[in-house]
Amino acid sequence: MSRLLVTNKSFELLEPYEGKLSRTVLRGESSRKGADLLDIDQYLNEAHSFGLQSVRAHFNVLAWSDDVQELRHIRNDVGSQLALMECRPRHNTVDAATLYWAGMPGNAGDFPAEESFYTFIEPAVCFFTEETNYKSSSSPFGIKLCDRVSGRPLHLDISDEPMKKGIITNRNKFVLGGSGSGKSFFMNHLVRQYWEQGTHVVLVDTGNSYQGLCELIRRKTKGEDGVYFTYTEEHPISFNPFYTDDYYFDVEKKDSIKTLLLTLWKTEDDKITKTESGELGSAVNAYIERIRADRNIVPCFDSFYEYLRDDYRRELEEREIRVSREDFNIDNMLITLRQYYKGGRYDFLLNSRANIDLLSKRFVVFEVDSIKENKELFPVVTIIIMEAFINKMRRLKGVRKQLIVEEAWKALSTANMAEYLRYMYKTVRKYYGEAIVVTQEVEDIISSPVVKEAIINNSDCKILLDQHKFMNRFDAIQSLLGLTDKEKAQILSINQSNDPSRKYKEVWIGLGGVQSAVYATEVSVPEYLAYTTEETEKVEVQRLAGELGGDMELAIRQLAEGKR
Image (tube, rainbow, N blue to C red; front, side, top):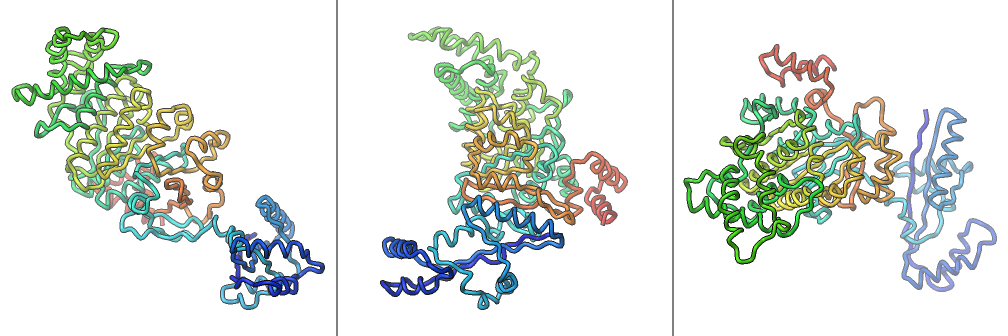
């Protein structure tokens, strides 16, 4: 058994000495014979010249072990680490017992004066900068985590309080963790607590990570909340981009429709010109004016397509200043978008008669695992979901909203989608919302400039879980996320010294490049069973819930009692 403990880091503020008295005192208190008078003079001159505060300082590290050989290794390791910090360590063999006693709270009066040295306040406090006590946020809103050392519960606000203090400028978050790092578990833990505090949560998932929690919420609210959408051929996810309750289309709504249509039209390698963007924007505006004037026209993609094909194309041809095909090829666009018009392969996607109503539902999960390999369908469905969320945001004033996009963000990581992502992040910030992108694909984030521009640069809160699988690529991750060496050291310490008697995983949270710390996600057994993504445990919970008439909460309680 071995221990390593910083037992005493103290300094005493001194009144500035003047003239010969200063030098006399310093020379008289020097612990070594033949003290370097030049050093003393230099010290005092610097203090007087710059108005620096003189202090007496002392630092010690106490290490112990019941194995002599291990103790020798610990001593060498401590000495080498201090040397790397450009400090000169001294192994004390004379006053060890005295220092041990003086290091206890209340015993500082017994500290031997000869063990301290003179310095200035800046270097004296340098060892205090790397550590602090874990402190709960004063904000009423937040999530429950733990002190990684003691396991003491902490209340942490990573959204509102940092905004008020100016630490962050948006509430968006970027979450990175490899497979098995506890990423899905942590996200379940976070969104449950946000939901319980009144947040409207919308999730885009590709791995059934939130199915258990969603089902629990649905049973708990007796079907009033906890909606789980799954894309199937029989019941595909669809919406109507032109649907509004009152025919009101603000600038953002129009831009959103235009961005959607451009995304459907252009391939990943095609560049969107200003003329194409401008003309399509004009077409959207003209169509909106048409449906406002004639309420008999059903607002949907089909009627927009017909307007584009007939009226707008004819208007283009009749213009005094012609628009060339090179600048805006309307025929090419109509051919490409034909598959979303009635009779096309995907005519159901943009012509929904029953629009997705998320207004009253506070916990909604869209599971799109079945189409994640479909390069045509997957991006469109993802946009549909995001559009539904943005509409929800506009209508709910003063209510916290949260959009979580798991690996589905890859559907949007093309050059043409960068604009849509930037638009979404901007919109989220304005309406008391936050977007959270969650990924485990390191190569994807490193290789995609879109991710950096649209997601990372707009996410002031970074959340990283165990990164040891990516050790050989962490320098690239560090550069991409703009992490300091201190933050890197914190991240690489995750799960390295966990207490084997406690069941938890650690997580690093960084806010605006200003604050960062490692916390522990330690939950009760019922919470664990609600969040778990282990197939056998999920099946066991569902099986018992079925036997208990669908009461999942009761099933979890019974299983938890059996595991205690």
